[in-house]
Length: 230
Image (cartoon, rainbow, N blue to C red; front, side):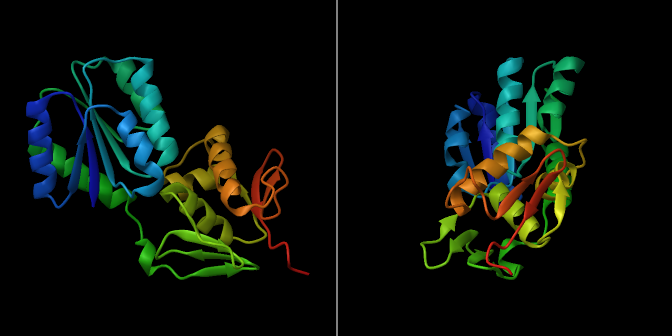
């Protein structure tokens, strides 16, 4: 398992890294959140811990951006966070919000509980899916169209394509996709789904603006089709 820890406090960084490593995590320490965002496309991350000294829109936007890019558990640690700030962070996609001081033992117990909830069947145990000229290979988290070079998929892109390909011809609502891909129930964040669909189309569609695999069903959701089927 891999974890990102983002904090500017050296002592806290050492403590968090030690606790996470003792629980089996490979830990990457960063001071600038942008360092995390840059590596999402090519890295499988299970946990993100963000320790902040300030609150506000910038932090909620960061949490929202991470949630939009990955299926990792997100923990935010802050100083004397007001209730409205905690609520905003949860709405943005945080799984756990903690105020200092906190117990490292309790933190790790909560981390394990979160991972039990969000960790599904490992990719490598899933079967290869082939529909028409499109082949999805879970073991390498990649997709191939015909004889073209395989395209690497992010965690969320893979989960979306796997969900669509295992429901061929069915119209999937945004609510269903949020639950299947991000792992939580929601009233349906259409912008979140729309952005992910756009990125996936860029990898599997010859003309993303005129898709043949992932069709938009206006006002409802999306449908996966085999363009070569009779």
